[in-house]
Length: 115
Length: 112
Image (cartoon, rainbow over all chains, first blue to last red; front, side, top):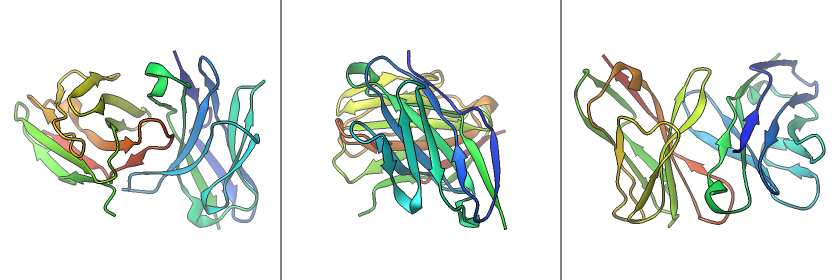
């Protein structure tokens, strides 16, 4: 079975500081990894994904994520946080084939960026 | 390009009533799915479909019914609403073999 853990319910960071939102996963085979963002009263929006290739993936709004196979992690990062980055962030994983086409989501991490 | 459209955005039901949440996508996506989002629980998969005429259960299917008669539409039916079904419901779709999901804006359901 595949699973995702987002160990922090909430992350607080000051505007201008770097931010990290943590994600670890478990899946059979090579993982497909995703980050989504949800702003208040909105649906989830895709940020970035890792399927293969460079371990550092760049996405929307200046976000990036680093795939670490040995640590089974896919942490979301941004060099300089903005107040407008405050939102709920979800990590998701799925396996490479078959029934595992269905992604599993983490419980979400609330990012709060303070002015 | 509308993407994924959900209706209604808000609904209040009484216990025992039935209703249908509508979901339509205009991207010709084969895969469609319904999630519910509850505080502290993340997203939980209710039902999904890999194409017209094919549906399957997700993690929390009880009390819900789906059908997929066309590629575009994937309605979610609540057969007899219960207070435990108070939640925000999201429909999502994707092309079968590519990665990311496209989500609707959500339907907030309250069951009294």
